[in-house]
Image (tube, rainbow, N blue to C red; front, side, top):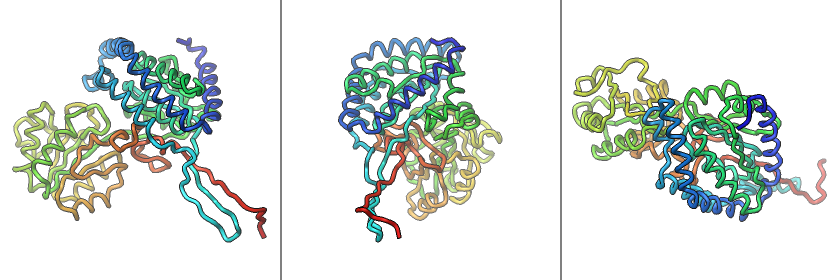
Length: 421
């Protein structure tokens, strides 16, 4: 680990290495990138015992820091989750290579033939917190899209991320690609983050993966462009025309499957006609499952709820909590989401096509769902193999950021001695 005095020099060297590697990756054969990712997957599985041992150190560190149960769940790796990392690497390896893809082409009356083709962004900096699997996801997606990546994992996942990163480097070596294509910042020192945010000469984009504090810091202080989502304040609207069984299944999964991920439901909006039927049944099921329901005045008559405060609307709990309120119609639900949502993921449960269409048309969240759990807000579930994050801005990338979203484009223009009049 480097001393604080070395941080600027350390980061400058990492940046220079990444920029040099990105120049090679821009034209690396698709077969080489695929080979590197499959070899990395092999290495992760072969070294799973070492990765789990490294994770045990991180879990101990997390307990000492007093992390919540949900955050500890985000941090924990077992053999099943390592299998998921392996599967993600192989899925990205198996995708079509986006680099060089012709997006569109056309001829001009002047005689020019013009193509717009995908090209890598260059160097991507990824800053993330406790989830060590992001090391593999981000490394794989950046490599697939021809980008070099600088990974700065959270202090909680320091050892796990290091063990996974070593496997990615094994993959690069096996394919004859530059080992500096995927670099992990080798220090917990926060000064490294500050440096990374201002490396405009070597870093092309920053992707923060974490909570509101981290993302807010990055957005305030970065001089490099940022792909970010600030929070996953995910709403589910239970419409008058909802199917009872679908509603129960979807809400329970959306809230309780994994509470610490950004696609977990945080607020349930219930049509006023359902308060004594489906709505009450869903809330009782949540309470029975151990969820603390922060209810508005109408719903407080249901035993086991607690009164909601103004702070509960627009709150990302990332835990076994959910806010719940009654709305008179879909337009009121839309208005609530516009006021309190974060443009991440929102869902409607309804069998009415017109109501669903209105919900989809009038909200501008990055992901809108109907009759499906918001826990599907994930690049892997979208067929991207993995994701580097969910972008809620409107510039360049939006929603799950996979390999294709980590590219820009350039124009290739051909003539035949063509001159302009």
